[in-house]
Picture (cartoon, rainbow over the protein chains, first blue to last red):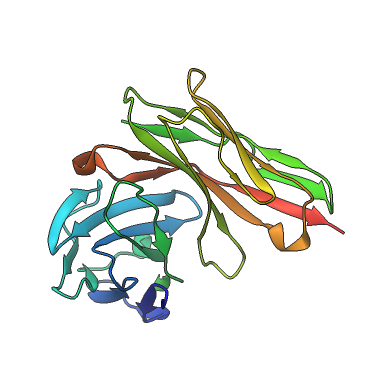
Length: 113
Length: 116
């Protein structure tokens, strides 16, 4: 099976702009989770989607939003970008079943200038 | 809220030797899962090993094994016969068994250096 793919891999944006990141999970996986990774804060959970519904949400402001499509692909959107949003954004997929094993994509490196 | 603590920011080991990475967690739940993930410099996070809280037997995957002490809320990772390719950042993670509370909480990571 193909692994989790994320596009784009690198992105440079300016403060105030918005950005959309995409994640394609492993075929057959219905759960997609998003994480923000920074040197100072480590790995922080953003949200999880399962069968097109947001199932869990982390403690991030409303500027961070996401959605999941019927084919399980997910997008994450950040509006009104701030310098502090510079991070590696990781997507992880899982079958959604009890094992909860997550398989991560390579990440999208977002730089806000 | 659950917390995961990795008290060793950095560890080093000689090639072919054994190293143990520590992880403690705090939870009031009885049903949960614990994981160790490896993140090499290329940044792709890889699942190393998984432990279900209801299982008393420690999980093992080839050279990787865990010491799961449920009462002490400890979940350490032992890497035997360390190889250069084991050099990476290792994250300990907790996941609730409750689907609706199921975000994964990660520790801050331990950077492992393997010396030839």
